[in-house]
Image 1: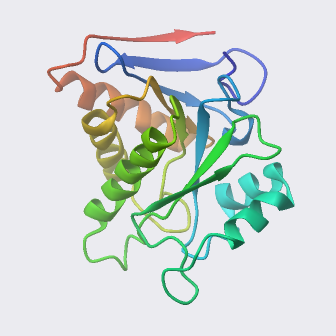
Image 2 (image 1 turned 90 degrees about the vertical axis):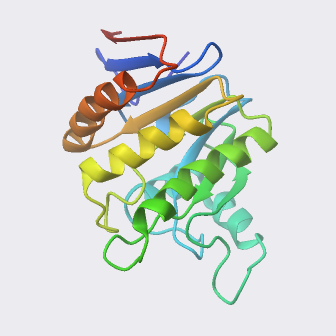
Length: 209
């Protein structure tokens, strides 16, 4: 399996959340991530227009090629200028990406959303729902809303990991592929703390490969 975003030794935290689902937290470039190129998807932290933007959104669009923007443009608007409301998710092919699909979701703007934790949880939960509906077995997330949307890393990590644990049924592997050292370190610490409180965690370990 290819799951890191570059060459060299990579630190991976691995949590078996159930007999059939596991969580992995690693540092890397999500645009380079894939497992089998058939039943895998990366999650794009999009905006409501779904036509590309900055940060990870822009990087995913550049890596996938112009076909991704065309596919996003073809997603029906639910109201003028909005193809994917905050907390919801949509799916397209991955085109030139190693992963077979892109799941687009919109996280909350932290200082604007009146219930940012619920909106962020919905973004993760609906991404997993869309994955299941499309027979996706392996999903890679970035840290949704932790860029220009301003979500504090520690709070975001708690919501993200707790939601993944609650809604990971029928997904073989959920990955967090995190580009920033700061975000990765917060996720790594929070993953251990949150996972240790969950009754169904079977095993956890940290390893290099």
